[in-house]
Amino acid sequence: MSIKFQFTTILLFSLLGPAKAQVVTKQIITGKIVDTAATYNWFRENVVKLGLKDLMRSSDPVHFRFWCRNQVLEIWSHDQKSFRGELVSYTSRHSPNEFSNSGKEERFLSKHIIIDPDMATRIYERATEVALFDIPLQAKIKGYKMGVDGYSVSLEYAEPLKYSMKDYWSPNSQATVPEAKLIADFETFLETKLGLREKWDMFIDGLPKGCYHTGGLTVVCNSKKSARRLRRSH
Image 1 (tube, rainbow, N blue to C red):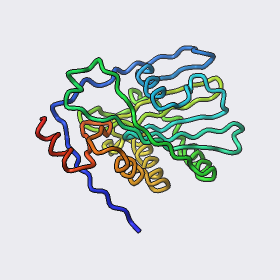
Image 2: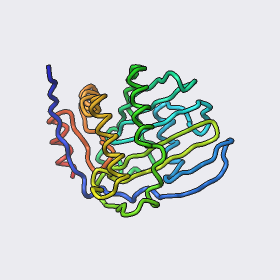
Image 3: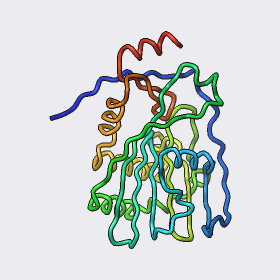
């Protein structure tokens, strides 16, 4: 039986803020070789808010995260034989006054779903089959273009002596870039195997009535009353 959710999605053009600064560094931090193309502190804040492990301190043989559209897929192994995983959907409540109160700390709402070990193994195998972890930094990919509106995919990967964090803007809009297509295809693979959108809709539907951030320029409202109130405020 298919489940249908009726949400109102509103695009907030007027609320576009500055993009995250891009920093590229290579250094040794807590015994790891770092190769990062995003603001690490921004990621670390989100990791703490979601109750996730700091991969800079991970001693797992392999541990990676695929961040996309306010969801993060996490796969790890303690022995590189059996794998575990979880899918986290997260958001924060939209307030019409939030941009005038920029000093107020953002509160995350989240839902963690455990992934079957066999599925976690299959996802890791797919990632290695397509060499997902070997994709270079966006700045080093020929023909990769940045835009204003869109979404980003971020990939964290950790081994005992290696940590990388790479950020890619809207890979599904880079039709002529092979590396971007690979990332977009992996996202499609996850959608097919895990039902990312349906799980996101169920997550939003289970929250108190209101409007919530989707990770881009839009917010989604899970009640008509909240949607009307949001339109009036803008």
